Image 1 (tube, one colour):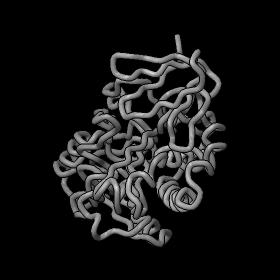
Image 2: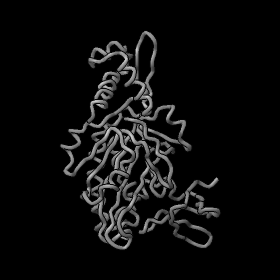
Image 3: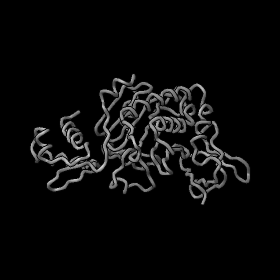
Image 4: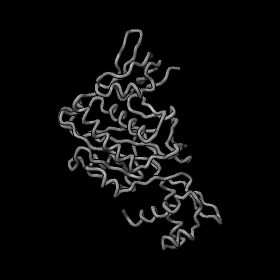
Length: 320
């Protein structure tokens, strides 16, 4: 960790009490000038950290921030762990180092300057507010072997979040996680190598933990976070459990395929048995959602019978 980020993390730790802390006190605790404190505060705000500043009272965090305990993370995971205060993209970092990685290696960051979601969307990534996580895995038989993997990852994420006391969560095909019917988490799987031979997959996961009001304004769909929980999950513990459960579930998927997860998917599927509309470019199909097949396609019961649909440009919505 650079000294620059070390100072910023010290400031955040002092502000984590939820009370106002004066600039003079911060300067004294850190052994730096008031001007230096102001410079670090300004820099944190450019990284998306909302900080109240009140003359005569000092500074206070507008939202809780949970930072990774790097030493505990490394000690608790058998694989390699790459941890950054800031990075362009955790997926991008892993993609650029595939020849050096082993199954289960992870990259975690507190801030992404170029976080990505599905279909090229930007994933809003303010410093310390959320979880930005990527895991590496190799499939020797290529992309065909990985068909349906995104649904497996969604099932994993639901199970892990439930183990931390998160309720009222479910999945929206193909791999979005919703809390109280608003998007809580997303999954982006990217590949390098050959589609018909050995390929390397990067499984990216983003979970909203404590979205600031200002950052939330930049999101073009209803969103949720974990800030209303009585006990906010410890982010380090969440990463550790997510990595371990992903390894177990991917190994099960390699042995038994998506069939081993269909019951878990159906139990979490927010649209199962409901009338829905699939949007595919300029066309759409309406029917009753009947879950997914063993390739991960969504099943839709229409007037012509049950049909399977799959594709990167398909959207799923409740029928109005």
